[in-house]
Image (tube, rainbow, N blue to C red):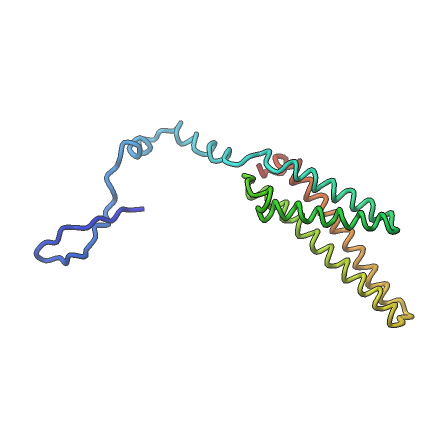
Length: 188
């Protein structure tokens, strides 16, 4: 970026003309221009360490545990398993959104944007899974209330529930990569 400095008006130039020439070189810019290879090699290393490699791991572990427990207890069924699964799903959504949005306890995390994407992918999977589960429940109960004797509404609801379970598994994989696979995936 060049500096602009006013030029003294002469007999033929107006008073509002600015000089856009390059600023005079300082000692620092002269040293870099001389080809200081060691200084140039140190700059990328300093930029790579600008992010904290351990940031958000405890939140990621909690998020992964919530997803794993919610998935496992969702298959038990009944009143208790389904409610605990629902609570775990909501807790995992809250944990991943604090990392993704940077609110609450996630506001002071110095995450690499590539690592943060895994938390965003987890959040998207969980939210889509939750929305599809609600739609499946409404389709199943709506079809039963309207007297669907063909079973079409139950078939559609079952297909949506299979998709929700696939999204649950993907959310667990993304949470695991966010927590433990940062360097192995080339994201740290």
